[in-house]
Length: 112
Image (cartoon, rainbow, N blue to C red; front, side):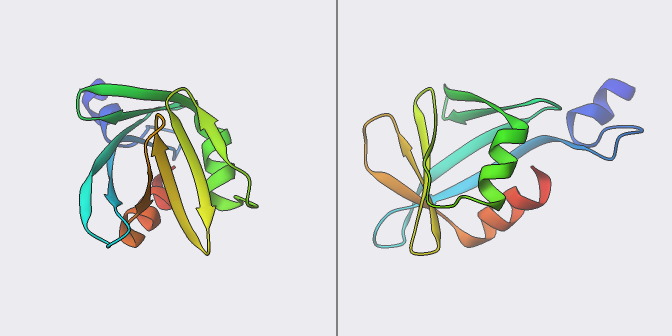
């Protein structure tokens, strides 16, 4: 039973959220082009696009970057996070950058 609780929601006795969150990706026309799926664990965040694992990231490093991006890119494996003009973007491999939807970014900031 305790293992099920740890898969989604707050970890017992820590107050730290673990689970899965979906992040909406938008193109230049603001159309949804798909979703990133993030598996948030105590020390890591694994980022998936469909059935492909793109990156395994340090949770604290990603949290700090999301809160204070300071115009610096954050690269991990096949994923690059960046900011431009107040929006947050991700690039998958060498493809174009996709903007994170505003509500998805707010949700990610709340749980990461």
